[in-house]
Length: 158
Image (cartoon, rainbow, N blue to C red):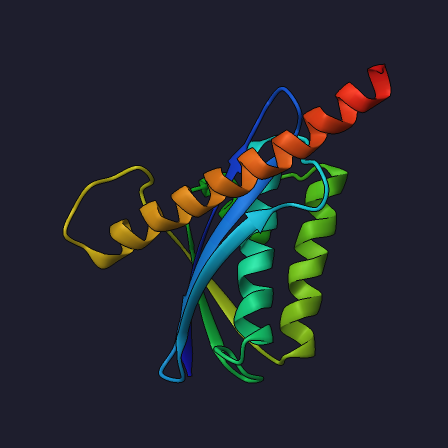
């Protein structure tokens, strides 16, 4: 069965805080959500890759995707697509995310295809609306992560 996962990330360059939003749908069901990343990211591309791994993981965790399915992963980050497809050189943290995605797919005997969706776009196509929803969820998650990091920094100074 085809499962569509759209994921987006928001990243704060000052703190490394990030958040993600995802939307997953199949004939079985649909679900969306997001939140803060548990760890910081080195840059926006890493955050976008983290968001995709989270989105695919949550599609399986919520039985939207099942073993043997085909995942259509959509993101507004072309660098993430190129990294997952092995078409660009990756830094160590990106390699770890590529390996995590491969393990996730292998355990579930699933295949994946990637599609770029233009970010921050208004339009009638549902994927633009969904990408904007994911962007909003990601910003909320990033703000939460950033607030936590800044609170820790203040506590260390005091």
